[in-house]
Image 1 (cartoon, protein in one colour):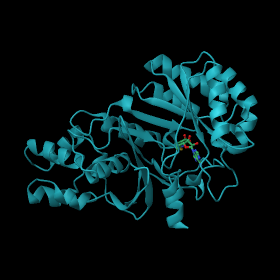
Image 2 (cartoon, helix red, strand yellow; image 1 turned 120 degrees about the vertical axis):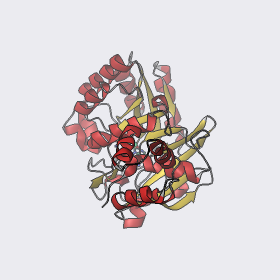
Image 3 (cartoon, rainbow, N blue to C red; image 1 turned 135 degrees about the vertical axis):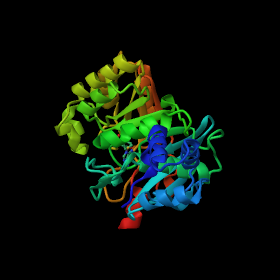
Image 4 (spheres, rainbow, N blue to C red; image 1 turned 90 degrees about the vertical axis):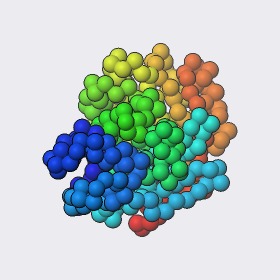
Length: 343
Ligand code: SAH
């Protein structure tokens, strides 16, 4: 595989252009072209520079192979990488803007029992430019540009564990927030982790004030280990400490994802225990009814039970919302679409 030009910051592209003996204003043309979602072969630069770049870099490292449109307007994208691997992403339309869900790895090795992304394990990490490339491709396909973006918010909640691909994800975050590029503010970005404590603490020191989201899904370590193998490695108490550290460093409140699984974590006692666990913390809880994955015999709660769980948390003083499940008619849950293609 050739390199991925979209991995590079503006400064790195400027060095490359200089090394190629080209005038320095070409760097801006290359960088802006890439950020507009152009292929390397479409960059508005002299043919010699373009063909030099094509010798070393992939023309189109992330290509939209298929688009599925849900009745609710949600779009699901199947992307093909230069080595033929497939990843997926979703664009959800809200009143305040469009949120794109991106993948950080091909597959995942965290092994959560309810998640389709992990079914075939981890194939490989994505580079920074392959993560960014998903956004650039969708922004272009949706008619956006660098001034009027069609993608305004980003969630790292597709396939993969972002902190299991730490360096590339941090590089991606620096590039996606950089001035002159697609320039999405860190405040409009959510990073979801299953709770890799050392990386959470390290990330607190990077100075990237995004919405740190932790997949909790349980109230005790024992219960958590039933669906999330990572619970055998890190304790909930240590995850909470790492969240507090992130708040201390960035002033950003943090978010917990809690998927309601029938017969597992969704009754009143769990709502009370979750409220006790989180009481007084600068956090928010995102509830979602588990999206059924046919390979897993776990099911979501009823809408009514989910509403009761939410009401109990709220009554106990915890800030919480129940997320609408979007795009379920097009395989909206993690890894479902790719799983359909590779099985
Ligand atoms: N690896 C990261 C991010 C990817 S998953 C993490 O674990 O946080 C994004 C969110 O979707 C996580 O909270 C994950 O636990 C949740 N999720 C996975 N499969 C799901 C399903 N079938 N139904 C509902 N939520 C699911």
